[in-house]
Image (cartoon, rainbow over all chains, first blue to last red; front, side):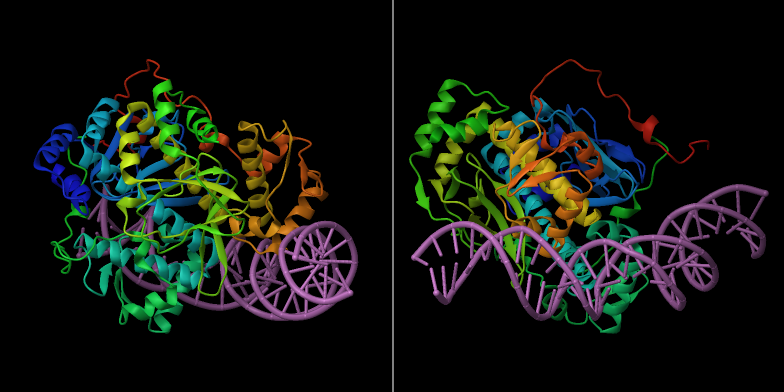
Amino acid sequence: MAATIIAKLTALHPLPEEDKALLKSVVGAGRLLPASSDVVREGDRSQVVHVIIEGQAYRYKLLPDGRRQIIGYLVPGDFCDLFGFLLKRMDHSIAARTPCRVAHLTEEDILVLQKRPMLARALWWSSLVDGAILREWLVNVGRRTADKRVAHILCELLMRLQVVGHAGPNSFRLSLSQTELADTVGLTTVSVNRAFQRLRQTGLISQTSRDITIPDVSALMDYAEFDATYLHFREPNDTRPDDRSANRDETTARAGPET
Amino acid sequence: MAATIIAKLTALHPLPEEDKALLKSVVGAGRLLPASSDVVREGDRSQVVHVIIEGQAYRYKLLPDGRRQIIGYLVPGDFCDLFGFLLKRMDHSIAARTPCRVAHLTEEDILVLQKRPMLARALWWSSLVDGAILREWLVNVGRRTADKRVAHILCELLMRLQVVGHAGPNSFRLSLSQTELADTVGLTTVSVNRAFQRLRQTGLISQTSRDITIPDVSALMDYAEFDATYLHFREPNDTRPDDRSANRDETTARAGPET
DNA sequence: CGACCCGTTGATTCACGTCAACATTGGTGG
DNA sequence: CCACCAATGTTGACGTGAATCAACGGGTCG
């Protein structure tokens, strides 16, 4: 449970044991939310800070005509609205795309965490990386063709999944639908679908149902103009839990009888 | 000089006098950079934190073919790379679009500021707002037509300039070139130019050289689907009693629990 | 005066959106 | 076990918004 959030924050910022303990004590068990429900909704007055403990979610905004733009992915360990209590209200929503367990922290909790130097660093670091990804997405959507946008997000997914051990060296399971991808990269599902076809046709990717394999990773990255710098992965050494897809237990968390 | 940065951070977050003094002492005079030079460049190893004291700048990324995407505007008081020392290297560049005076702070400076509760809040607040703007830009670029993108950024500029007293109730001077606007909203200059023409034609804006007047602000905002919430102008720390957010499940649960 | 940036224009192309099916899959309940 | 349904993926025909290409005038600066 709380181990995942620590894993995330510890990933590139080893924390003292006491900080880990503090985190654990503050996070608690969390509450379970069903898939497709909103964790946080645009306009909410935020006095509570939400943390994803289990499951996957995404940030999004809706347009008046119902179209949607996804503006970020959340995985266990991510804060939905870190320091959100500094703002009057949420400017976007967050939806659970799988059943999610989410913890509710108070402003005081955050301020306590904030007092620990290493934790404060970890929080800032995580916020900086989120911002960097957002900027790259803006570049992607603003300046790249449909094919490259899709290729680029695939590269990003590959690397982000690898870091948490959910992807092989050149393959991963795509848990996002083409509709979700479309809303991520600012296209329609039809265009995303055709982009996929072209990427398959040119051999840049191969695909069996939702399983993506990339025959030549650097070829795809070159094509997509993908430069992983913006993900700010850790320097060498240290234990990387990469490789092996293992069993994906994240997605298996089903809405229990206890909601 | 250093007054501007304090103005920015104080804008929605009043600071104790001692914090202001601390800020002043830490910021110093800064150095002058010519227009069109880079304040910080992609790939830089960031050991120093840069703050804009005077002038205007923008964040941007270049694509291999030389095209550019602007990913943020900086005004006096903005940090170029707050806590950048937590990352290995800059993932984007920052260019001065006017001559800029920029201060160089050290990691220690930031950590000292960070220790002051109200300053720490102010820094987080400013970072949150930057993120919110970035998300709205992504929506703008990802899901809106050329005309609406331009209209939207004009609304944003109007409001942001108003807040610092650089715009009237329905007019402002556009200091950005159409090329810069194009690189902001993911279009070509030709398209931006034509969008302007259509906005003028329909009377949503009127323009004399670089001076923009908006006959009916709310008409333009409606057209652009502009909702200023994301700029978070209102009081940030307004700790009013409110209902404890009990369960949101009732409102969000979808699958019939009639089992 | 020439060089350059900026705004503007017209002609043309094409990438992507739109619309409207249809196929496939997986889950659900009878 | 199958019939059904919703979500997802796929396809074709067609329209269009924005990119592209190429030029031109005005202003400013050295």
